[in-house]
Length: 317
Image 1: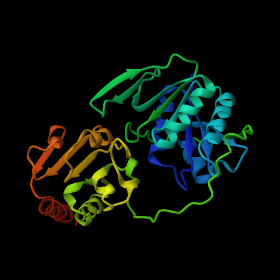
Image 2: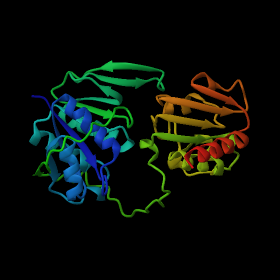
Image 3: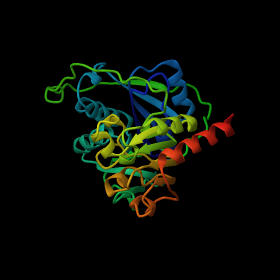
């Protein structure tokens, strides 16, 4: 029976939706196991079992987060050996893709990134050329490593199983991997909004907001969504770079993406074109964003967005 190993890195007190999506894919491939880095509390362990994990592999080292990603790749390689997995699933984040690449070198394994779907035989559907096309690919190596975009698959309903078996794997010591140490961290203030890459709804602003993200934040809050931005907006200092969506920012694939005051250049499309529904608001009727939008509004965002927010609040209230 095929075995799939899901890497879950520091989910916190509860599993993230993206982790549950990876478990859903793992179960469709065969027996599902988890390589877990972080504090495994009883609730998380129960949730892993409920979503199909038969075993959870824990690293012998407790300081993996004190370094860059190399020790995590070494731990994951040890977990693959211990589990006998033929498929490894990671999140399609900057760290996830680097870990996948390093793991691929260690295992001489095929690596496929930007995955938006996986067939039961392991064939991956991959988003390419800024989301303009979807291709299929399958690794011919003994182990396949897939980096999957969030919001790409539906989460299975819990199956109600008990907590899975926990197994500790030895992390090999590697002086080179531990050469760069993290000396400090600053916690990002909580906004109360969902994580940008996992949000089902994203409201993004660009040069057209002219420094004022207030109306977009109100709309995002009314919809229960996240706020995003173009590179032009982040470079101008109007909002932090961790909100940037695009080729040099974060990749999102929400159910609904609202673009306000963004021209829709290819760099922006690269980060959001796989969104299920795209709504564009722009004063320029010739803006490239309307070429990919499912719905377009030619108008002033400072008039359109507040009206939409008010109407949504009325319907919710």
